[in-house]
Length: 334
Image (cartoon, rainbow, N blue to C red; front, top):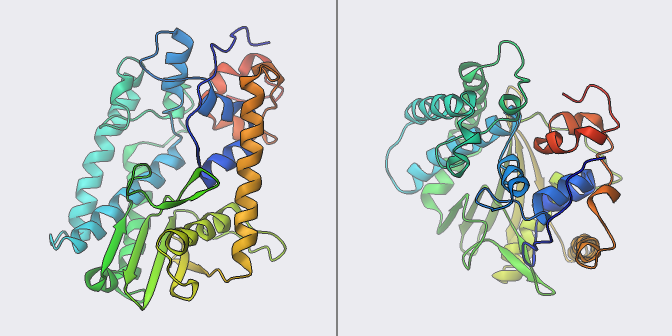
């Protein structure tokens, strides 16, 4: 059994997002370490400092996805602001950025300079746990990311007309801040529902389009249930509808998968019948998390009471596996 005992409960505040819900559904222990353990890199308690560093780790797949998002935001932002930045220039910037970040992570500087993570520094799970796959380096990851970015640019400048829409839109949001007064989202029963949109384009009286980039290939469609990705973009549509009072017929959301030869786009639209169902799903998730967290406040739950992820692959990729491994039930976790 892990000998470390929690040092108290720290509540993040009344907010909810699909990604937060997904962590709770995937692994109770990860949810605890990520949101409830009081983890921060400047904590006085050594374990909380370590957890603060670990919660900043990301695996290579996540980092590559973030780099693709960064480059797309840079490219579209230059179009919106009329800076004339080409996609080749963006890729050159990205290559330098990824090289610098990789060096920071490879040297494990994140262990002594945790405050620099995400401020020019990078912390990869594979470097922390000495599990980097053979043949993987900054150059190979960049080439994978660059393929997705070139696929996006060809599509955005061509068939999708994204670039033209950005130029002519009345309002454009490109990866806006997640928190704060101007952050996309809406209030539900006193809880701020976060909408972490990648791109939103509004042409007054004509359309309000929301986009979410996915770096993998599109999954097979399941008509009988709603996926996390689909729930995510449905929640995003409630932002302009509930916060701006825009009619649903003007609002749409697009999941854009960039992992294939050409992007695969899946468009989702809410109607008056589906809005109550999405709100019910969000309320149920908020309620579950609230009850679960209150059990920690009251002492009814402890770290050792929590389940691990149901799939061992989740544990292999998890940043917190170093504080879970002593009692981990799966084999070959490293």
